[in-house]
Length: 486
Ligand code: GLU
Picture (cartoon, rainbow, N blue to C red):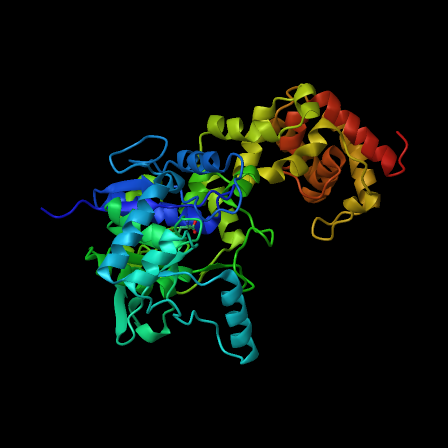
């Protein structure tokens, strides 16, 4: 029977979810689902310098919000636990000692001072630092004596002196490094805790992980990992290294330089399904022109072969477009529910039926956080400049706007049924009767109603939502503003 497919998402609790991390989680999840395997969550907290309050919750919440349900993990258990690295800390030393016995590692008693001066020496000579293997030749007696005397030590990986190490990455193909380029890296630190480079190998093996998806910054470390697997006689997992995510200017996406994390995107008003869809396509192509994928569709369509090794460009415009597509697909009720939190207290108190505003917004909105700025005029007419009445394309200026607003006011006052279609046909008939363009009536009205040049609807749609009294009041205000007397 073929071994069960097991993938793992192994984030460090940093307090936020990087877009790159979300992509790794998504790909791990999709590989497991596509191949009928298990998706495991492991928290890698041994390399953390400081504890970050609530950081593991961020990880659970993100996976939950994104619908990436894990099959095993710290919060739900499983038969390969514990799933938090710090809770596994006692097992690493045991494996390190075993590796020493197998000839794949050795004790190193070099003091910090010695290593620092070694580094300085290398620096002076302009050479890249590498541990000089001072302790590799210690005899068993010397080692036992030092251990018995309680001398602090680390355990280092013993790299082969000759030959090369190769592995096949599912994305990058065959990678080969000369073994003599590999440093005898530390596996167990002087505090007894493992380095990430050691812990991840032990954990992946003990948890039966078959596919490791991670950023390509780990490509150069992978030969070292494989030498560990080989020394233990363990099976090497399939590696799937994924490309860097860059911004259109070519710089790497990073939280530190202000690029959004997953949580940031959610609070900016991106829909989780749209974010996931977009992130799936950051470096993966289905091989067709399809761009909109639900998570279920991705579970079917995803294929490791579609992952690209070229850097993936995080393009906000594309994400905005995709978010808009998801918004358009929602039911009006569902859209109103997610738009409502962006409506101000003043707007809600104004008595306006906000679901009608939502209906207009659903046709045009790309990002929910743009809502407040685009509809603030409903609650209160902003102070605006009469230059807004000037519009070449609409053939309007403050003078003819004043004239037309004055002329149309009684017509509007005479409308019985204050409703978009009726208002619209009344206004177009009015324009026709005067022999002017529709825009020469509609533009000034829209300006008077909103005080803005961009609005989520046309003049008559806004008028219907604002209601008769408020609309007439604003038009009169417009006439006054334009210097007209009634
Ligand atoms: N804990 C590592 C990180 O958050 C995970 C790397 C890996 O997937 O092995 O970067």
